[in-house]
Length: 310
Image (cartoon, rainbow, N blue to C red; front, side, top):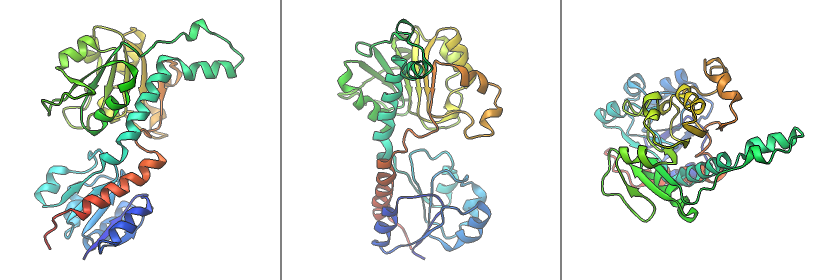
């Protein structure tokens, strides 16, 4: 049964490299959950991005499953604890899109600090407003990073040439200071940051981390970046902090609710849409032409090294 069901769009290099290992890949990127449930008992491996939740029901159906590979970094659509109880090995590929996320975060930050989107829109509309679009320089500022895994480290490395101080907090790591960031407490993040960038997985602990109370404690007005998961940040709290001038600009690649029409139905959406202090992108920070291939290469390499008991 050395076969793999692929239920999401994937770069063909994954199939090429895993079939060279002796696997057979069944590539079904348009498959629906109900059909997948009927097929899963026949597969040893499952490859998924974000198509559906791999919950207890799915795992109980996949009676012969040995591993799940997620084409990305976050594992929040997989019941990790139950998979572990079932002996299913979990594989992700943060190494494949960390550079994409780091570069996207830098791009968002520079655009926000220099009003690039707003200035572009105004010039196209026949307005030439220099003073209204006066920007800020990044040099000399303090950038606070929450979560110093693959993504947080990548962002810190990309900032190396900007002459900034980078400080980082990670609840689950210690002793990680390096040439790119200095380990600090959350209190120091709140006290010193001019920029706050979030690079944490979505867990019960991080859900709603950035809310009104959290933002209230920041000593200085900040630029906020979220390229992690939407539910880590409460959008209304960000909008409130913008009105209070506690947030100078927010770059949000992810939102609490994503995709239309559900996004347009949120109570905060109209205010978000009209704010020229917010830069939005459709959850693409880690989704470049380059990462599309690299994610597949990383997953194939990790599957090659799996210790699977037959």
